Length: 350
Image 1 (cartoon, one colour):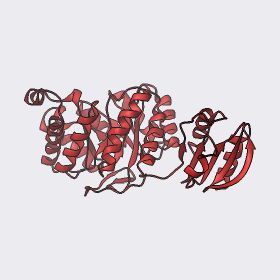
Image 2 (tube, rainbow, N blue to C red):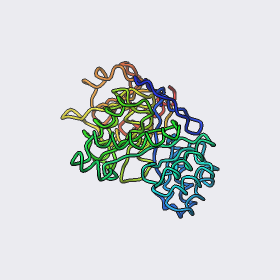
Image 3 (cartoon, rainbow, N blue to C red):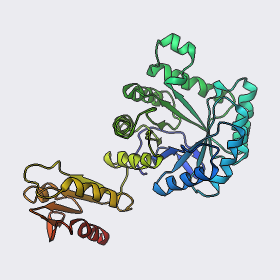
Image 4 (tube, one colour):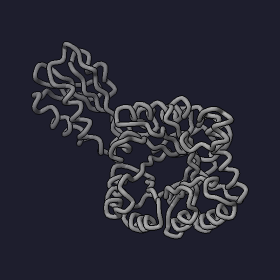
């Protein structure tokens, strides 16, 4: 997904992608049990098809490492291994062909273990993502700040960064997530002022689809408007594919990507067709269309066509009928039953 970025970002390569601030990449994570290789592969393929550009998988034990070659054989996007505490899993993932490792070096033991992980990654040009969140904050930082404040989260992240820098390793990506949106925004802004490593944005434990979308849109969207963020994940307690469509919509809403953009009116007493149902059907029917167009779904011709005069294509309801229009000009009148297929037919012509 294209988007300007004001930060001077240190480029980090992840598989065939380069995180350098010139593009904003959409990420998600598999939620299939790591023991289910077939299910994990299927979900990874579905995510790529939906538009996921980086996918992460939990590697909780050595058996789960088998996921890596199985998934990479079927997808073309980078695969990230999510690892906690056991440095041997990080080395095994690197040897299995992983594209990026998410691990916090301060949590894996001695410096010798950190150096072993760094050696495995450096030999294969594999970057490391440091992932800090409020639930994983060190006890001494909690004691110092009293709670998982933005300052505490950034201090934690930079502590892990320094460990890698001491090993002369700088292929680093950072995430600093919080379930509290103001804290998350402040933490990323502080981090962006502190270093030039690529940042992965997300609101952790955002919740179910409704609340998760709201919190992620505010948090991620605000930072992207500031020019902060190279990759994003909309974390939802739902099917991972929904995270992809949500991320796409955030990027469209702030002008960071193209694609289908739908505008629709909230309806009023003049509405004479099932506009709410029609708008939902249009949204579903066009979600995978790869065209940079604006579609208007309006309730009446009194204001609808004029208000949406800049739409590439649109529909305005009447009394049991609808008018198809383009850039403020009427194209044709159709019945309510014909409204959706007629609109889709016109979209196909664009």
